[in-house]
Amino acid sequence: MADYLITGSHGQLGTELSRLFDTKGIDYVGYDSNEMDITNRELVMNTIKEVHPKVIFHCAAFTAVDAAEDEKREINWKVNVDGTKNVADAAAAVGAKLVYISTDYVFDGNNLGEYQVDDTPNPKNEYGRAKLAGEQAVEEALDDYYIIRTSWVFGQYGHNFVFTMLKLSETHDKLTVVDDQVGRPTWTKTLAEFMLHLVQTKATFGMYQLSNEGQCSWYEFAQEILKNKSVEVSPVTSEQYPQKAYRPRHSVMSLQKAKDTGFKIITWKEALGRFELKVQ
Image 1 (tube, rainbow, N blue to C red):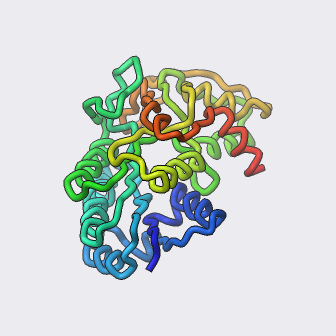
Image 2: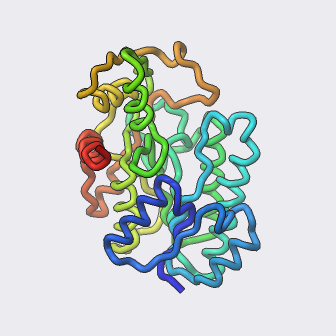
Image 3: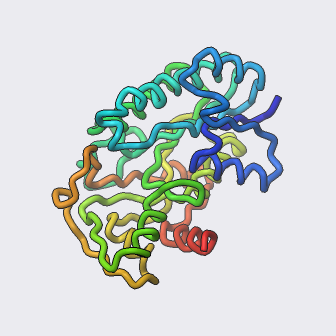
């Protein structure tokens, strides 16, 4: 028995959330994919019924966006849709609340303003389509849920853009980064704190959007990451840096609903500074 259960507990966000709970002395159990494969419906049902948590933090996901377009399309759907449905149905069976992490990729990126939580989704890649279907599976199974859309996630415990840039700077004098895709970076620590905040403050159930304050292009993000490194960063267009999966060009989501809960959101530059100091 435990009050909280984390799926994907060894992933980038799941590890961050586990560390947060550890520091606060919060009782929880965590499962990675080897311990509880969320695509195994019977296993998920039996495990969650045995633990009987009050809240499930669903961090398990398939996040290889480009691979999801072709060779990993089936596993993308199996994990992000079927697996999420299994977790949501199990939560309903034991009367648990569910916190599900979604993505800005449910939007097409054609909005020049901020996407509101009730704007109509229009995903343009397979990962976004699967995460949207995961949202719908949660909404169909439960009334007591929090769906949190986030974007451009970086953190201490997994592969991400910040680590990629820092590693490339060790072996390259010049780097090129796209400057026509704009969004909001998100520190996993900020996201984990918000997930817990929603539950502990008994915020209104429903859809939320959470990233760090401010916005930038990937090029501007890279510049900030590498500002103390002896490497030249040059901007290129998305056409000059083709990728399998479509990336939204203007993926800025409104944070107002999250702020209205009383949660304080630091800027992405402040978050990046704290993160880099932590990992150095």
